[in-house]
Image (cartoon, rainbow, N blue to C red; front, top):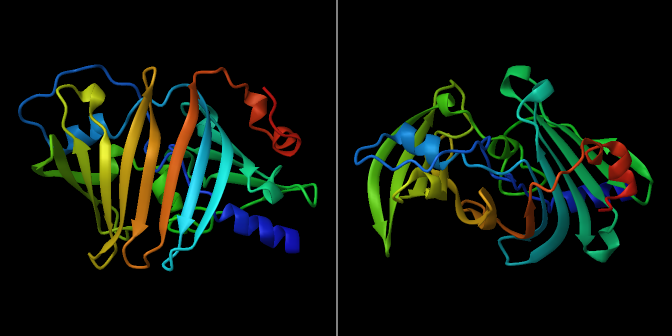
Length: 282
């Protein structure tokens, strides 16, 4: 039980990339010019749903900071593959711990499912000390995703029609301009009362990306702020550096994605309990 508790604490340091991604399902778009007048829904449709590639191999570094400034750092090899809804699977991801040294060999795997399947994600952890794989259940989409400042709902993303999107303004900041879009959920008991997103305004939809998100709690108070910097690898958009700060607790999460490879042809059997236990070899 001590080893289980230690590894769960370790997993608490892991945070999402999708697309980690904090993130919606990614689809490719054409390099279409932006019309002079646009709606909030158009901005979200083109700027928030980007091509992430068929699969990805990268290094993921996560630093968690508490309100006192204390930091904890973890580094992972991250493998991800898009399944495009086949057999109700959206995507699969595996994380293998590279740092800290005492956690090397630990693994985490996640399979995400389509909304129509009405299934929560399947998750597994591998505990080297016990040589056992354990299932990890998701009880509430509003729970913290493995201890980070994003929730399971945040990393799963939302379909375009789940919110009403209003273009509030176009805001200038330095040499850039941003579409500011307010997204209000349509369900009766939402996790957030609203989200306000800043999307960089560019001549074509292809280069428009999300730069910031403000999340508001059920009382309408600002809860947390996410700031995003992207990198383009081939035709795919991938997180570069992302920071999330909970303004109410002052806890923060920082993510950095490096050594990114896109469309490397990852095989299906990589995303299995056997590989989770044995480790990944190229």
